[in-house]
Length: 259
Ligand code: BV8
Ligand code: ZN
Image (tube, rainbow, N blue to C red):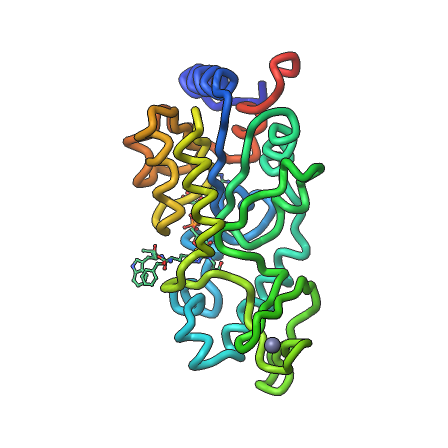
């Protein structure tokens, strides 16, 4: 096992491994912390701010209506950061587990690193909040994948819809916007029928995503949390492991022979 800080942590990881091994169906909820060791700034931690703006100030329909250039500048900056990042050991271990068993990844992040780590369709995550690398039209229904550099120098250079020419927006769920009903419905279905919910690197502040672990718990499933700090989920978790995702998640999911 990697250098797990203490015997208590080592024992807790052993118990959590047992719960995951015995779970027929596992759902995983990840947040910005799963990508922290890939170099992607988290929202509420150090480096999460941009020009002293908070995500809640910019990731809203109102901010985009008021100043689409500023919001696209922010997303362009985030794209430029994420495009230099690669999946870390946590993304790889989660994708590997999804290849081996009934194990579904539900992500809040928009960074695309779970998608990049996936080696099979089974490891493709359910994207609750969309993707940095997709944009959609503000007028028609067109949407497209896109990894280009965003030129936010003026309103005229902002991304346009290739179908109707209207202003395009990030294909991302902003604060105050509802999640896609089918995506949320599938996530709630998965959580309500899971025997274990593994929650990795989320401050559990953003709803409805943060409520998914509770659905598993209320249905009698185990909730295992991996985080470097306490969260609102910690008290109700079956086991809450303190440590970085890139260390603990591979430990939790390594097939028994590799333990
Ligand atoms: C909705 C895309 C119905 C954007 C995101 C008032 C008005 C309107 C709505 C609300 C309101 N009050 C409350 C709400 C609901 C709101 C909400 O929950 N707000 C919060 C802030 C209170 N939710 C919504 O608006 C949702 N829609 O409710 O629709 C509705 C409709 C109209 C009106 C009312 C309701 C939509 C929410 C989706 C918002 N979009 N992302 C973008 O990315 O640009 S959410 C955003 O936060 C990201 O997706 C992010 O993933 C998510 C959650 O954050 P975390 O992932 O947890 O990241 P964070 O930085 O917070 O924490 C990182 C964690 O990792 C920490 O715990 C840290 O300790 C840990 N960590 C760090 N390093 C490591 C680590 N762990 C392990 N290893 C490490 N190395
Ligand atoms: Zn259009």
